[in-house]
Structures are given as C-alpha cells and as structure tokens.
Amino acid sequence: MEFTAKARFVRVSPQKARLVLDLIKGQRVEQALNTLAFTKKGIAPSVLKVLRSAVENANYLSQEKGFDVDLDRLIVSRAIVNEGPRMKRIRPAPMGRAYRYQRRMSHIEIAVAEKSTVAAGSKGKEEVVVAPAKKKTAARKTAPKKKVAKK
Image (tube, rainbow, N blue to C red; front, side, top):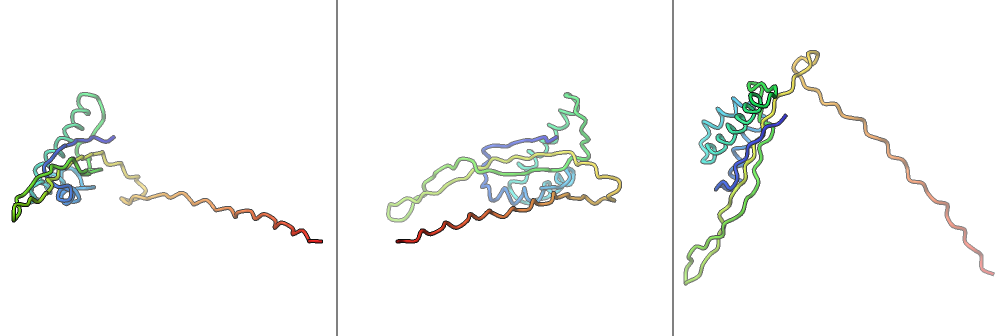
C-alpha cells in the first residue's frame, strides 16, 4: 500500500525541485529525512515537510484504520514534481520598454510504501522475472494474379 502527501503551488521552479527529489527516490524514509535535513538547497525544508506528512499519513492509517504498516520499513517509492501555473511579470527595460518574465510554481508529490519482503532463498538479491516474448507469425502472401493474354 502506498501513502502519499502533496504540496501544491510551491514557489520554486520544477527543475530546482527535481534536483532535491532525485536525491531521495528509492531511499529508506529515515535515510531520506537525514539527507533532506543536511541538503543546502532552498527547497529542501519544503520537501522534508511533505515527506514527514506522508509518513504521518501512513502512521495514521496504521493506528486508526487498522492497516498493518511497519514504519521502519517504509521507503520513498515515488517522488515527483509537476509544473504548476506560471505568474507573468514585467521588468522595466531600457528606452521605455518592458521585458516579460515568468515566476514558476510546482506541485510536489511524495509517496511512501512498505518495502516488500525478500524470499529466504534469494539471499538478499531481488529477482526480476520476464515473460518470454511471443513469436511473430509470418504474413501470408497472396497468389499473384494471372495475366489475361490479349487476342
């Protein structure tokens, strides 16, 4: 089961937010919290707040709704940032002109999930099973049409 938290209309460009979110994707929650606490990017405290909210959502559902969730085994399964609306602004330019620029916003979404148990026989290695590909059948060729001889 996945537990999500969102922060919408955050005043940072999506490109800058992706730099921080790429640091925590796939990490354990405890390690991701430490990473965000010591990251010097300006958006890191906002991302930390969203991650804590996702963990608290998992905690709430485990206590109140009766889901069996082990908070120590949570990992950051998904961390994405989408572009929000842009604010159009004008900057004065030489000779009475005006230059337009855009203030970008982001929608940040973080999902945490419980890490699946690894089978005892695999010795800590996860295996990926791929189904065999189907063979392609050859296209049937139609018989060539016979030419009619002219008389």
